[in-house]
Image: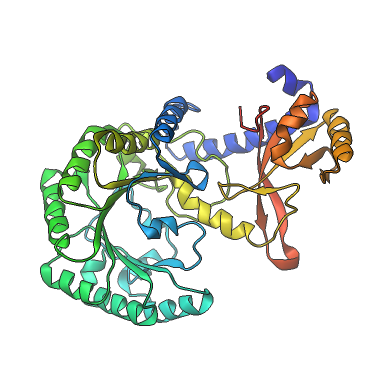
Length: 428
């Protein structure tokens, strides 16, 4: 493969340019102290787990960034592409200080800890901005620290949007029967609890009691938490405990480093995923960078639940999945030629390209079959479904990942990644 690339100097230069951009990003992060795992470490294990999950009938969404079995909250299904879904917070005050929390990265964090947001106006403005409000969430901070205001939030959301799905995120601290009853009266549909394994078994038992209490009411009870690779064994036990309690499902989040508290990650022996993203981009999600091994552990847990026949749904939500919505919203700004670009399952605009001496032969072939294609200074671009045809001509096609930036007349296509493709159109 290296010989085939080196025989195409323009292609080789472009591939090196993108590789250099990634190296610069990794080096800049590492200069601040974090350690990256060896490149592609664990990739083969993740591929094996995905294949095993496909064979068992697991659900794959958003280009494989979301993997699940059994119950899946409608809010998760609407997370990417559902313009009628939004999560709000009253304030960012919290009774915990999780080392992986990314809230301090948010704009005006200190102000939003001290003062409540104007959530009433924001809730109304959201409804005016979208065709239909389908899902409304309340997070924090810890919403139960302002439980009366949380109840007022759900009452107003239900009044404004009678058919919307309403959900609450909480650690469960301070949850009592009176709050659950009042929340149910106001139409709360779902409660998502976070479980802090690193706080010890006493903390786990406390949240399990809160979960058992919530199960007595009408809403779906779920758990959502990041997965630390070294806690895989304890997580399997937790899945059994949650299943015994009748929990509807658990969202397993890829553990992320929020650009702070690296000492806490280092003392746990953690390293960062390398490469940090499948497609490197300036993502707006504040979650940070994925930790190596967390994805493998999450996929192991989805497979474990399926093999054990657990009743609760298990959903792996990766960092890439969190970023998909931003990509999709950007790419909805303009429709590209469908004979040249495909809006792929991973929400990027995908096209195929050939460089150097391959341009003439592929261009002539596409002319001969009457297919449209793009002509740039140094390459020919065409629909990725024709990669195999290009390869049969002796060309070396590459896949190109793209986003739309800008709006209206100012919108333009920005390429983010090039990767050599094999004859089936899949990356090597």
